[in-house]
Structure formats: C-alpha cells, structure tokens
Figure 1: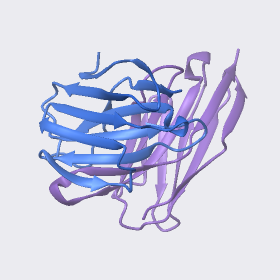
Figure 2: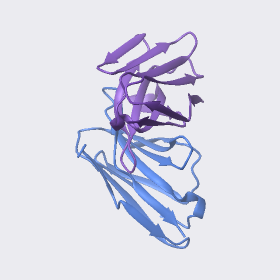
Figure 3: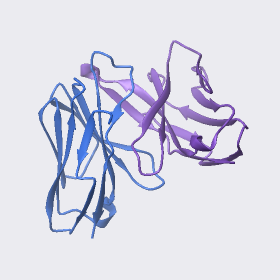
Amino acid sequence: GENVEQHPSTLSVQEGDSAVIKCTYSDSASNYFPWYKQELGKRPQLIIDIRSNVGEKKDQRIAVTLNKTAKHFSLHITETQPEDSAVYFCAASITGRNNFNKFYFGSGTKLNVKP
Amino acid sequence: ETGVTQTPRHLVMGMTNKKSLKCEQHLGHNAMYWYKQSAKKPLELMFVYSLEERVENNSVPSRFSPECPNSSHLFLHLHTLQPEDSALYLCASSRTDRPNYGYTFGSGTRLTVV
C-alpha cells in the first residue's frame, strides 16, 4: 500500500518568516494530495490541495508544489502568523472502486509561530 | 458547523462495556469513513463505506464493528476494548462523483478505555 512520510515533525518559526513542510509518497498511482490543518481540540480542516496533473497551486499565503517524478510534495506558508500555529497533515489519495478516496496521511508537523 | 456531526464528543468506557459512536452528515455525500487518531501516529483508516457498501476494512480488530444504515449515518460499535484503543475517532465524508476532493471531517469522539 501507500506510504507517506512527512518532515519535520515539529517546526518553530518567528512570526513573518516562511515555513516549509515536506512529504514523500511511494505509490505512483496516488493522484490527489490534500493538506489539512488541525488546531488543538478541533477537527482537521482542508486548507489546500493539488491534483497530479498540476505542479503548483497557490492560495494567498499558502502554496503547494508537487514533483511526480520524485514523488514528493511540499506545503509553503509565507508571512506566518501566530494563528498558523497548528498541526499540519499531508495526505496522498488513491481513488478506489466506487470512487471513494482512500487517503494515506503523514504523521503530522506541529508548527509553532512565535510572536 | 461543517455538516458532519459526531456524538458523543467524549466517551469513557470500561473494557467490558459496549458502546456506539455515531456520525451524521447532511452534505449529500455518499462515502463515509472512520479514522483513528492516536498521539504521534498518522491518522489510520479503519473503514470505508461507499454507496452504503463497506468497501474497505483495514485489518481492524473485530471488537470494532461498523454499521452504515444509509448514506447519511455511520456508526462504530465498540465492545471489549483494550486500553490501547484509547484515541480520537474521526468520521469523514466525501462525494463519489467528486473523487479528487477533500474529506469533510467531524469533530471526533475522544475515547478513553479504562
């Protein structure tokens, strides 16, 4: 099955700096790569995603890049703010029969943005 | 509220108890998922129901028993659990006509087995 590795496990940055989280995956059949943000005690929420036919996607201060050849994808947050502090999860998805999404998650990165 | 509701939010149960977790969505989704979130581990897929058919069972012990009576409701029946089953159990849903879109997660049930 798919194996997703995520680094680093913790990341501490100064407010205003950039943060980068990296993930690798093993199954070339994976075709969809969402990123989730989970604040303490809350549900994971989708913040950005990228499909396998796209190399980069940006949404305001958040961007994601995908390198299909190397099987890795990254989350970039610019101009970080204290409210960006949370745990971030990457995932790789394979579409199963009946078109359900089978997500394989990374182990998470705890981002701390210091004011 | 994102449209996926889980109850109860917290549950403490003994190892000999039987309890059920409930998930309900009113988003028009037709695939539903149970995930287990333990400390310092990736979210683990437990079960998938797509179009009310169980299509995935990731080698989950039989003390966890899912039920999906319709596309809006999903249950996880628990019996004779072990302390290592303590975790946050998350329900999620998606649409099978939009396979490459993210899940919507519920807030989870924090389960403690004593």
